[in-house]
Length: 261
Length: 156
Image 1 (cartoon, each protein chain N blue to C red):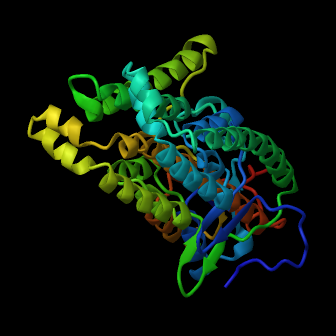
Image 2: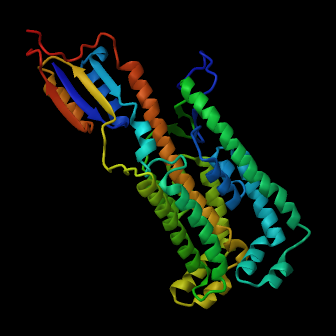
């Protein structure tokens, strides 16, 4: 059930509310988006709501990184064991990494500049957009949510902040990968050993390969939840402002005026 | 006479309006004036809730994630291990990002950070008979109006 009929054929809409989430154009800083692509290929595109290529780049990063043992090489490099780093890297895979990595950064930067222009055009056109959906599987609507609560839930479990603001796709994606990473890296066992005071054992049990993915995924999840909560709130205000102006500014309304003597 | 009130943007203002319409106030007698300059003000002042590249959060999240990866890597060698050093890296990076932004906005650009708390975003005015005024006031208050007032300049 949709609440807008496309009879007047607007050229661009700045948002779309669907059962999978609220997709919207808004201004983004291209350097920040490019930075997230550098932290983890795919993240920049997820921020731009280009989910299919974001997911594809993200999965490719997992495959190539684990196959070429890049994370292990990073740990060895940072800890000064350069010989071990050279030894562990798999040359059958490594060079495949570079073109796609650079592409992800470049493409997300370029796309941000494009979508910023499209946002400005859509914002000036100011067309009605799909803002409410009720469907057998989900209900989605514009609303105001608290960005701090989105961050709070994401701190406990990446993906929950996204679920709070109804970003079903990214939420499930993050939840599944986070659970996989926690399991494969032996993270919880390491935390358990850490809490019981055995730091040496805790470090030894952690898998370098998988653990090194975790800070980027965690940081991204928090940032994504926060930014999108703020932007959804602004979209709500914007849509409501339009609704009120259109419906509650009748020409016959008599403004309070002082009595003429 | 008129009843004036201010609201934040939320579902409550629409519920307040529909409730008044149900109680017999004609739609034409309700005037809503959204203050459309709030977004522009936010761009300049509200760095906490503004997220298009100049928010406090942007740099903090980016630098925090970077230093967390570095901390976790080096941590495999250090005594406290990768988890503690990853967390230390994240906290240090986030703080650096936030401090950097505070410096940029408070000292170099001399901008005031916006005060916290609710601010009026919509002015709602209802034209009514003086017998309806109390009912309208109660309805508005029940829907979390930020402020309400009766105005009776015509003396009717």
